[in-house]
Image (cartoon, rainbow, N blue to C red):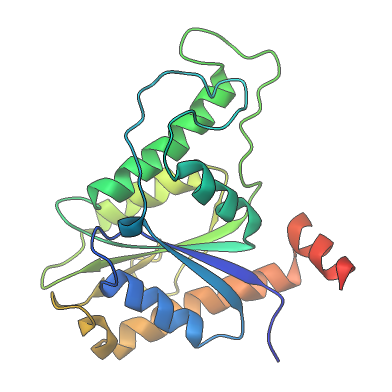
Length: 217
């Protein structure tokens, strides 16, 4: 029986249909959930200009795909971030996280030089997330995973951890060629376990969005 849980994958790779995409797709297809996948490789994501115009709670004023993706994140019951490691995480994924974190910061503090009278920095209200970082032939340092996780948790999202080291997320060795990740069955199973745990958490303690959808059925 298919769950009523709806998940979203944000794929941070700068190439379309790379290993980070195949990893998320394979995990989602193994679970009885509804899901969407957004590949940043297909999206226009500009750099934050620190204009501070989002400080009063409005959307980002840059004319790109950021606001559309943010709305999809807010509509989902849980979020999976799947991204490759380059020198750090990919620059497009990092720019996207910077946009999200700057939005929270500006709403919370009313810009850099002011304090908002009624701070409104809520974006996700404890919505669960997990993170997968992929690498070609090298290793993903745990420090990179930790920093990426802290960027995301600062948004108000709640991390779902793995039972295995390094716990904060899953480091996945993929090989360089597209689709090579499909050979790493052990890592795929670990990712599947983490997402299944997230689904279970949502079903046992559904947040407001899921409750509203169930009441409409």
